Image (cartoon, rainbow, N blue to C red; front, side, top):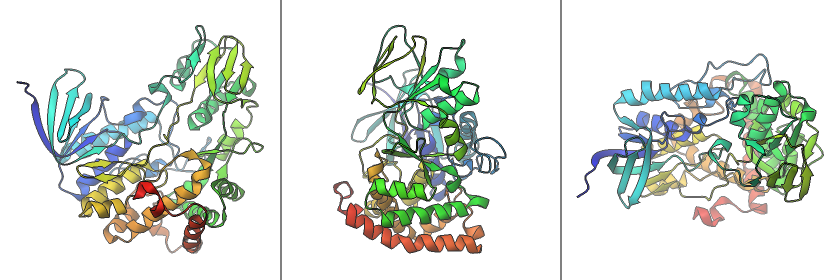
Amino acid sequence: MDTFMQLETDYLVVGAGASGMAFVDALIEHSDADVIMVDRRHRPGGHWHDAYPFVRLHQPAACYGVSSTDLGQDRIDERGNNAGMYELSSAPQICSYYAEVMDRVLLPSGRVRFLAMSEYREQGPNDYRVVSLLTGEEMRIRVRRRVVDATYIEPDIPSRRRPEFEIDPGVMVIAPNYLVEIGSAPSGFTVLGAGKTAMDTCTWLLENGVEADSITWVRSRDVWSIDRAWTQPLDLVESRARFNAIWLKAAAEADSGADMALRLEQEGLFVRIDDGVPPTAFRGATISRAEVEGLQAIRNVVRDGRVQRLRTDGMELSGGFHAQPDDQVYVDCTATGLRALTPHPVFEPGRITLQYVTPGYACWSAATLAVVEALCDDDPLKEHLSLPVIYTGNVDDLLSFTDAFLTSAARRSEQADIRAWSGHTRLNPARGLRERASDPQLRQALDEARSWVEPALRNIEKHVGRVESRPWTA
């Protein structure tokens, strides 16, 4: 008869990345729960261990991580592309931060165990197992309350996927991770992809002396990004209040997602790289105006569809062939980052699937769900408070996206204990609002935002229907 090591816990959390860490940190603060965390990696930090070395947060570090522990110094950068805004942590800083949270907060609580280098396997109902990737030892876990899937919204990144196109022998294709290892200069670089990873890659090449004319940028479609200056907390939190007012006004007046994006651009909140090309994609990325200006120097932009095959003499695209020198380095940035997910219930019997329930902030969302789990009594109420906010990647869905996060936030605001926590947690992107509530300009922005909520919801219902009427919320 097979024998297994037997473990028992209240919550088995699969994934020790940003979502899993934020969830567990908030859960043990608001409950007496016992937790086992399991991850295939050797340390907590999730995809940050696999990220390209020059990546940084694209939201302020002041609002990232876990609720209990500060990340960074809450400092405003004085130079560089992020000058005048709150600091953006690097991948090594974030990985070190999560190791510190695990070692100094979670494990010392006596209620968290971390099984690193281990794989979760669900054999069947109530049959949960974890296998060590080093020894092959199999453990059976008895879960008293729930399994928590903290991997559902894990981003799709270049270094952990195979390219989805053919590559002929002799063609050099690398993930952006390996740019720092190039030993000799090629004739040029061709960056594949239009999203944040591609933008970061092009920016890094330019900052490291590569001429703009030596960069070819393949963009099958252009992307809307958010001007990061509008997303600042603490001493600059008025920007966030005005962000909300502008967003809601656009949602109240637009007749489509595309129209809403143009209205946000007119107010300076949305930005694009090429003023002559209407973007059709939106995944919530933020960018500085300085970065946009740098990227606009790249004139060799190819818009002939998706890459199908890379040859030594050029690229086969869905819209035609594009000739290239044979010693180009192709940088594959075609991973989607935020994946277009199928909406899924957050709370089910015996299970929680962590998802975005706030717009664009995985850590805040996960911690919010932990607080909902700890403080609310029944699953119907928990699910009512936790509508998933889905990034489809399509700008046409901006109105539906807005409806989901407005509805979810309004429901949670009716719960006094959840509202109080949300107002004080460092993960809230409007952190600092309460301390500056007497500022007249800030109050004006908040009042303006409130005045647009009901008009926005009425307009959304008129054009796309309300969230309650969609099948996946039933």
